[in-house]
Length: 102
Figure 1 (cartoon, one colour):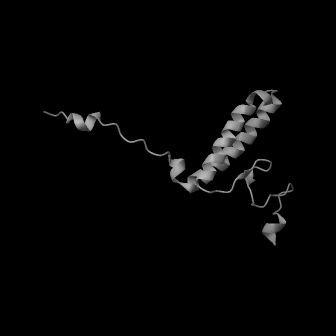
Figure 2 (cartoon, helix red, strand yellow):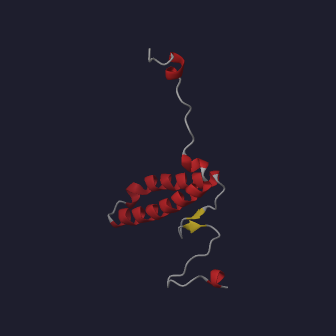
Figure 3 (cartoon, helix red, strand yellow):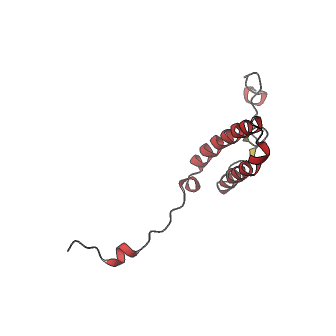
């Protein structure tokens, strides 16, 4: 009496695509946050003398960011500045870059 048919319980659900691969907006937000986290981690590990040991791990996370952004055709990250390629670079003194204020 209260048993469900075997056909419904034995079936494995189809794996769902991760949300980050379904939403370009979410991918943009998360990958930009990951860029900041990668930069901070690289600085911490370098200061602790572990920069070479962590290089492969950080490179793998950078690759993940690159792949996710490519899936959604988002601009690639310029790893020297930490911002998407083609966006204006903020100045060191906190003022708006010339391209934005013009």
